[in-house]
Every structure is written in structure tokens, then in C-alpha cells.
Length: 384
Image (tube, rainbow, N blue to C red; front, side):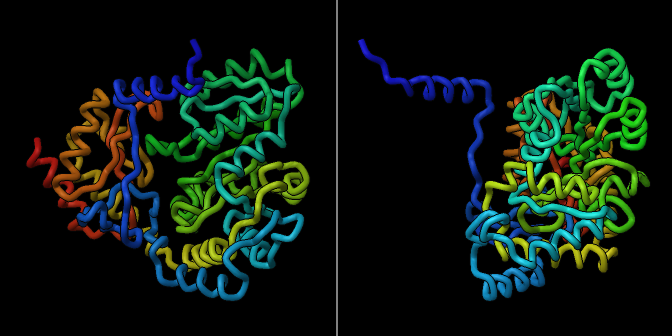
């Protein structure tokens, strides 16, 4: 008796439903901002990575429009063939200037930046140490490289040092991977100490600044700047799609590193270049980040206000605009998110397997009004 080779998909979906892990999209019908139109209702938006509110900024929109008029809607080819525009190099120069590195390379997404960079740097003869809570793109880039991958306990340098002592000498190159801001917790990696450990064991370090770019540091350059590590040898990766309000990813570092990646990072070599609109919008965002420092101060004022409003609750430790309310079960997280939605708040329930424990994740934006944050606090008081 023959069977359908696709039957297992239905069984797998049923398992996902039973575990309360099922996910579906929610349609937002207006411009991204502090208030969104979600399925016909206006909700205060605590679900966005648009930390500086730039995704809806008129200046980014106009920059994208002008670039599209001049250069078209798509780059039409890989950068090494027909897809390179002077606008791409302008953006890469602006990123290098912001990050205070020699050069930078723009990818079509942050995920592609991590996959391509990690796979180019190490292979089967090499070793990777990865923070247990790292983003999926870091973990999958490590797998794709073929290197030996060893996880270390989250932000635990003692555990990392013990494993370095045990394994480092058995391999040619060693690469340490870490997020700078961990996206589902909001905490920071201990970057200065990690870099010192890497130097002692002759390891490369790739730090993912996706949620720190535009947010952390005096000029918004990220956690490398925040921790006064600018100029130390490391590889900085980040995205253009969060605080910078556009799309794409980047790697910033030495001239030799960037030249090497142009010739070895498959996800850059074989992918169509970033569209003119996205490139121009990201370039405009970097200009705004450098000039409008009060926008970043407004963000941090809002972060502090939200922490005050949620005091007394089970808030996970955070030093970023990502603030999480820890809950016991997936069902509880879904119920709280549903109640918040019914009371005009859009904040997602984050559940396993994305995270080890369930939580409600609040992302703060510079464009939130004080009344938005106070309303969230009042809802929690009312709901108990």
C-alpha cells in the first residue's frame, strides 16, 4: 500500500499545535510606528525593532523614492557582475565611519551576512565557540561552515575559558560568536572581557550588533562603542533593518577582512545587490543617527519609564530597549498577549523553541509617547 511522502508534514503541524508553538502572521496595514493598524484595530506597538522610529520617517521615504527614480527598483544582479552602484559604496563608507573601522561590506540581509561571513572564515579544520543564546543566523552560519561547534553557557566567561583551555590547541583557527544585545532577553554580552580572553587564546571574534546599531554608544555605533572597544581587533556584523529602518546587513572591519569577504563570502558573491531604495534609506538613516542624538536620548527615557511602569513584575535583566516579562508556560504567555491585545497593546508572546522559557517581549521606540507607556502600566495594574 503506497503512502504519500508528504503526510509527515500534517503530523508535524499537529505536534506544533499541541505544544502551543504554532505561529501565524499578523497584518499591519499602516506605516510602521508607535501606533499600528492591526487587523482593523489601532494598537500601541511594543512589537517592533524600529527602535528610533525611522522606518516611517519621511526623510528615509524620500531618499528611497529618489533612488528608485534614478536607479530603478532593483539592482538586477550580484555586485560582482551588474548589480553594483556607487550608492552601495557610499553606504559602506558611512557604515565604516559610524563603526570607526577601515571598511564595510553590505549584504542583502543580516542573516546572509552571518551565514556568508562565518562560512568564509572557518571550515572543517577549525573551531567555533558560540554563546548558547545566540541568534539563529549565528548558529546556522556555524553549522554551515563545517567547523567544530561548541556552545558555552550564556555570557559565562568562566565556562568559555574552561572550554578554550580544553579544545583550542586541537584546531587551526578559532572563532568566537556572540550577539552584543541578545534579542529575546535584552541583556548585553561582556564584550571587553570576552575580547581579552580571545586575545589570550588567539581567537577571532564576530559580534552581532543587529539590535545595538543606532541604539548603543555615544554616537549610536553599537555595543563596541558603548564598551569602549572601538579599534580592538574584531569583526562587527549588524543589520540595516532595525534601528536604521531599512533592509540589509553589513560586516565592518579591516580592509583585508572586507576584501577577503568580497572574494569568499558566497552569500554576497551569489546574491543580487541590495535595492537602490533600501540602500538610500539606510544611508539617510545613518546621517540622522549621527545628527539627532536627542532621538536616542528619547529612546532611553522611554526605556526607563517602562521599567518603572513594570516594576514589581518578573522582568528579566535588560540593559537595552528590549524588556521581557518572564512567565511560566506558553499558554500563560499566549493568554497575557491576548489580554494586552484586547486592551489596545500589541506585544508578542515569545515561546519555545525560540527561547528556553516563555515571555512577553516589549520593544521600546523613541517615538512612543509617555502616555503610551503609562497606558501599558495601567493595564497591568487593572489586570492584576
